[in-house]
Every structure is written in structure tokens, then in C-alpha cells.
Image 1 (cartoon, one colour):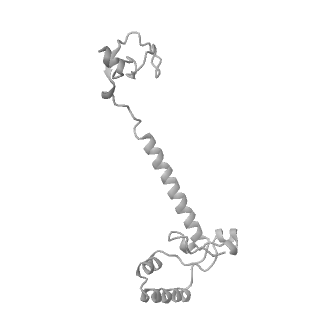
Image 2: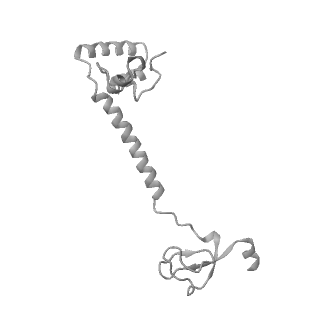
Image 3: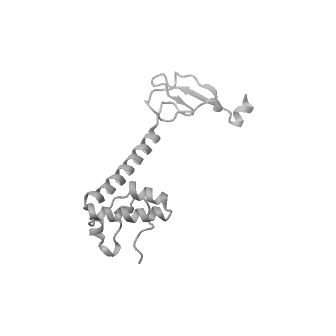
Length: 153
């Protein structure tokens, strides 16, 4: 047994009688509750068989909260762009649909699906464009679809 202990395979452990914490050290008091470990006899435990206790989803829960806050913030920001600008009228919508039909006829089917079902066409500037000015304006209709339509310098 001395050979395995020297190799570090076994360590002396104690279990706190008050809170049940397993202590793998030569402490004389429990680090959690402060109870004396004088009454707890040391036990030899195989280090490989000891499973480290991970908090019940603490890190995972925190990451899920951060992800949810980020997604909701982006969603709220994108909706604010739509709510602070006016939609196009019926005549403008007809002109946009005719232009989309030309694109469909030219073979741009995946793009046409995105333009018909996911793009929002606006007639006025949103708060972001008003803040930046027209020189650096950002097209709100392109928000989730890509940034390659940004104005060229």
C-alpha cells in the first residue's frame, strides 16, 4: 500500500459528520461548516473512483441565461428598427413584388424566397438611420439576411 500511496493513487479522506462533506486533506475542521474532524477516522480512497461533484447545472444555467438575454436583446433591437419606420404603401409593394418576379425569372429562387417571406420593406428611416445620418445609413430590410448590402464608400 505504501507504493500506491507514494504514486498518488490513494489519499486519506474524512467525511464530516455534521454536513457530509468529503474532505481530501489533512484538515482538522470542515471547510464548509467548521465542525471538528477529530472524531472522523481517515479512510483510504482510490482517487480514480472519486467523482468530483459538479454544481447542479450552475454554469450551464448561467450560460443559458446569457444566451437568452443576448437573443432577446438582438430581437428587441431589430423590432425597434421596424417600429420606428413606416411600411411601404400598396403601390410601392406592387413595384417591389414586380422586381422580385424579375429576379425569380432570372433564376434567383433562394433569394426570392427570402425577399418574399422574410424581408421587411420600409418607406422611412428608422431611429438608427436617423442617428447615423444618410451617409452611413443601414438598410433595416437586410438585418437578418446579411451585411453585404451595406452602402459603398
